[in-house]
Image (tube, rainbow, N blue to C red):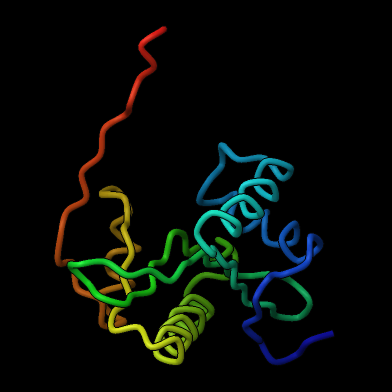
Length: 149
């Protein structure tokens, strides 16, 4: 049993499935089977990786991320998802994972770390700002509907 919390990359199916209960708090529309399938598909399409914090043999925080390169940001790490188990918030696990992501980005030669956070997630915004990530932009999107609908 792990006494000291550790950050690890989820590489096995078992590790990915163990991350689902935490990710489900952020993405409740994705069941366990679909979660594992989406993680594996994203690994193939855009080198997606899943990192998690394990404390006392329980996954308590999870982040999905990828490395990219574009005109605006250069070489960057993008955090698709970051969530801490509700029962374990404000205990330093999210901060530990965010520090780990910044270290990973630095080691990968990234110049920046980016993420989006839904407008209603005020607590998350405060968390990111406390950890050196000010709100610098807005994200816009639209749903593409099939012509056959």
